[in-house]
Length: 62
Image 1: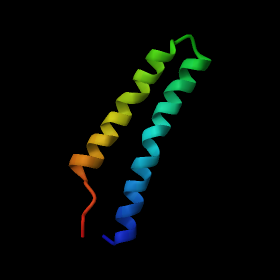
Image 2: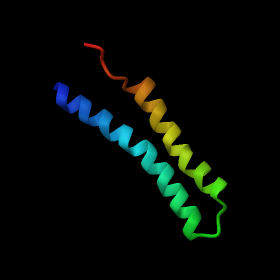
Image 3: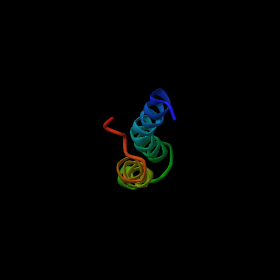
């Protein structure tokens, strides 16, 4: 695996973390959900992505 491939995968994970929070907030605004439940729903996949980025496939220091 090349260095650019590894960094692009981590860039996608970093971009997807706030994206899930924004999608949860948007879902709360357009539906009858409260903002708290929308953000909580968006934070669950964001938390999973943080765990993946830190523990499953951490960036190499080399």
